[in-house]
Length: 228
Image 1 (cartoon, rainbow, N blue to C red):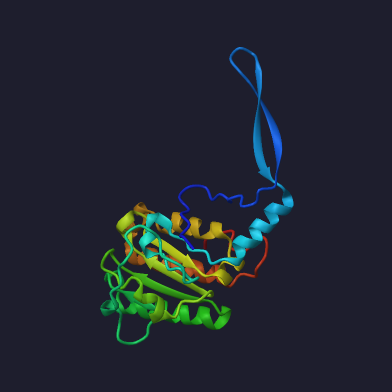
Image 2: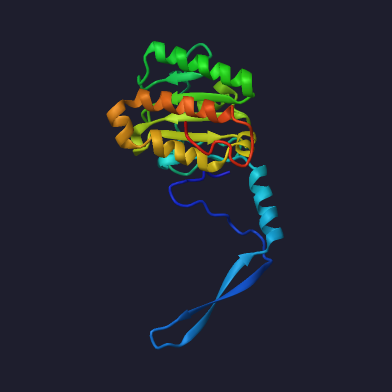
């Protein structure tokens, strides 16, 4: 499916033709009133729509990095700047942290890999980190390298488009983690002011720890309500 940009408010698209009409009244400058029909989905239709959305893979492409979006459903990739596929930039041995941009020290990579391994053992979710400067990226090659599935979170750290934090989230993760968490996380640790003052590495480390804390919280109405 196509990537979803979270810069603007997220809107549900009404795919049902059945709807009720609510009439809104607005006073004109001449004191006359006019009736404006507003189409709103029935509650049953809205419920089915939400269920459908949850059944699909969700691709988050924060900061406009549509080219980074991995389609977990096997469908096409987003329209913008697609086509980067450089497997030669992949490491020879498997690793959960790939830093082609040079943001992280060897020690930081090891700490992040250790935390990611702990997350997977404790929660069953797979976090994968790619640090890059577009278009210098392995791109589509990461999908097979990491065997991306519906329990995978692909975290792409790339400052090219301003906000350095970008996420692609599998279906099972989307069912447990509120969508608003990813936009709040990007807003807190990914904004340009933060990473320019603290460094790209600080943004990456802070984001990984915030994701770790979120995934370890019990699933419920208020899980991941705070970016820690």
